[in-house]
Length: 299
Image 1 (cartoon, rainbow, N blue to C red):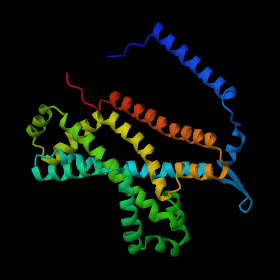
Image 2: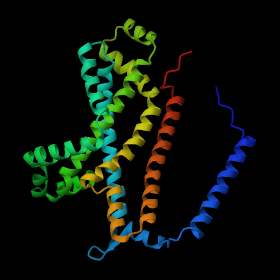
Image 3: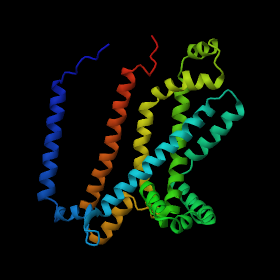
Image 4: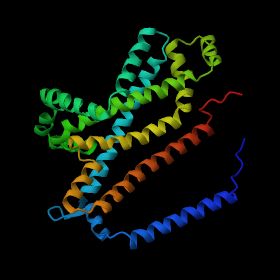
């Protein structure tokens, strides 16, 4: 059934007028009531700079931070989704031991502040495990192509240990929430679907892979989209261990230029572009799934 087109009401027009009036008032107040000299003309140079040695334009601090935020957010989302999906299946398992393992992980992670987690993983993974394995030294002493690939996918080899510590923190933290989203999606599937799969002779694994999980993930798409946006916002916490993402670069620039408002308004806009773009993308994916009949809607 096609949705009826939304018709604007008088209340909508009134809200729109009040919002426009508020924006105009705030603009007037900032221009005349706040004693602050704006220097927006300085901001563009921190996105791109000209490298005389290479004779080309290269990313500057803000664009570097934006790229690093995108990298760590994508890796954290992909790995946390895999982890959360697996543990979500475990949480919905009929086996008591499996459910206890999944619940222990979820409750432990969700009840620890992420700031505490990131310091635990930073000192444990970055200082101990990664130093013992020596991955960064191996990459630096290897062929330049490997270092270039690692820099393109993650970060420069000298910052790899810190980057991986922050990535593990985000994966573990976001994975706990994705676990509960997937578990709720699985448990929302009607009993008839389970019985029909059993009647067709599917094993437990085939039932989950071919019947239950596709429907559960389709139903879980809106909260998963919210968790993706949350991952992007939560990535700012890795700035405390000096990962050079957007928030860290903003703090560095602010301390160097004292352009407090310009820097943080720009960073806010960049985060909004990322999160709003992801929301629109997931919304388009949800519409596509509806069109192709991937999500199940009981009669």
